[in-house]
Image (cartoon, rainbow, N blue to C red):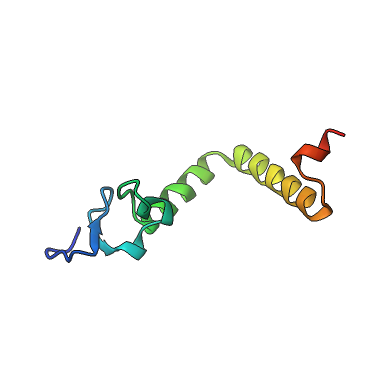
Amino acid sequence: MGNALQTSDEHACPRCGDFLPTEGFTARNRVGMGVGWCKACVAKAARKWNAAHPERVKLNYAAYRQRERAKRSGLGPEREAE
């Protein structure tokens, strides 16, 4: 589980209980939103969700590719409707 000693710049991950430096958490968690799961726990949960929802992952990735193509071609979301 977590380390026995904690320094002022370390936080405990509520999921795994490990004490980690601030850099061990995602930037979103470090910016005034409290401390959420550590990066390792977030990655593990994402892999589990991706494995359980392959069709959603495929659709999300296709939408991401389409947005990126539109950005590269100079067509933003506001110009796609024209």
